[in-house]
Length: 184
Image 1 (tube, rainbow, N blue to C red):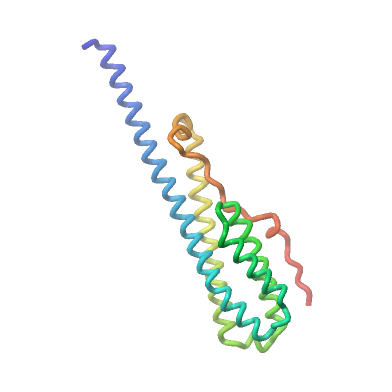
Image 2 (cartoon, rainbow, N blue to C red; image 1 turned 180 degrees about the horizontal axis):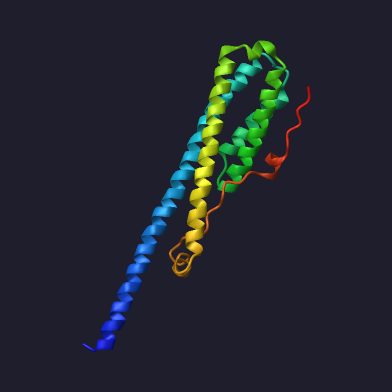
């Protein structure tokens, strides 16, 4: 065999090896992003499961606050139907806003504040919100790492061809960035 042909074959084997290694790395990073997204979904579901109990507890004391209860129900339904990260982010912001209004309503009822079930549910919800915040941060960190990798040389050459595209961040919607107005 010709020496130059052997060098070409060796160079091709090195290139194929690098692409395979890069591909495997991208698969691992993509699965990491998927796993982090699953954690967000788990925490969203946990919060979604707590909300009806919280709403029902508050309803017993503040039955005339139906617009707040409707906003919570509508936001839960929207979050349940979210099909993308962007839709989930938007629905999550709406649900957080509706929950804030629900908790503000609860502040007007001292007997509700003393209710053990309400206090426990509020504590559970606060814990879930903290876990959700950590899950969002972990997800966004994984997305940042993945997105940076597929844009780096030489990965950028083959990432798109192999079906690896940028992933969406879990972003806070504009409506959730507004400072809530609290009036006493």
